[in-house]
Length: 429
Image 1 (spheres, rainbow, N blue to C red):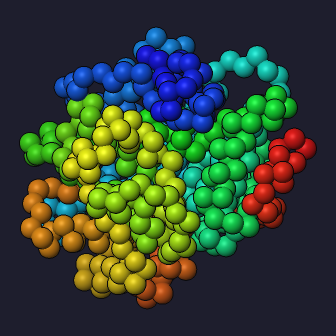
Image 2 (tube, rainbow, N blue to C red):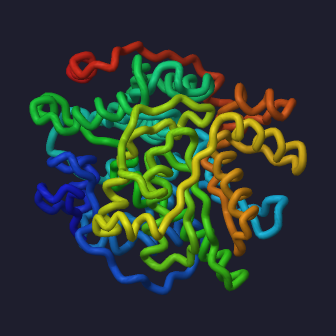
């Protein structure tokens, strides 16, 4: 299988070439040149086996094809359990059991395992450049930390991530450098995209991306949705519907693509915070990126979701068909606080702020009579957001062992203006 740009101005690339490049030369995002027809899928012996079967067509004919089972074994080395919520026929898909307690551990480890197996003619270190609104940077740093021949540079918006997220971003050291940018996540993302499209810079510093714009981050996120839906269908005979909290749209788009390939998923509803670019579009307005608004669910503070290009590609740029297929709902911080407090008081359930947005959206769907089996994607462990969650529930959230280990390390990050020359100066130094 080959991969082409969403913007149609770049030559087709192999999977290995697309993984190494991160972004297409024309600034677009890589997508498959053709999608296989939906097929009859079955869950494997474990999450890794299910994922390897689902991803096999994308690796067909590529140099990495034979290594796919081993890559999946590295990436999916921890569970993604589907657990019942207190309310009937409602579930939570826990995606936070990885090393940095966020769903992005799956994709980051998958990409790292792929790149480690790709031969490189250039003897210079590969710089993996990543913008983060909170969780991506730590997952990528953890996945690539200590790997020879790779340097990781993480850009995050200073003051717009939780204290524990900021600590994670700066605690790795060695081949990982954290830069706290005086700006928003959108500023960080724009800097990364500009660098990846800068041929002069690339001639000096070989670059790749680890944001959800990368195929190596996007495709593997299908695995946990497929495994959960297939097991649920085998046990109940029913499709699993999803509410996915989203900012840059990569995680939700993975679920959408999995359904397209034959995974028994029903409706997929998007939950956002006060950043309303997606809800406004799906309500009938134009797609209009805007400056991001800071919220308690900071990892979703995105005003220009990059993966919207891929979503339009999947629906052949038919905005009306796209609007007919999906629903996106937005909640504000006051509602988020209420949801966190009430779910704990009524049911003893504790969520991170991002998961709580999806929980509230599911409550709204049930209130208008939505039926069927629904799961909320729990994207991060609530202990990463102790400063938000604990005052609302009135007790301490237990910290997972892996997160506690990272928090015990010293951490530091360098300040940087939201300025492209400042970034290039650091990259070529």
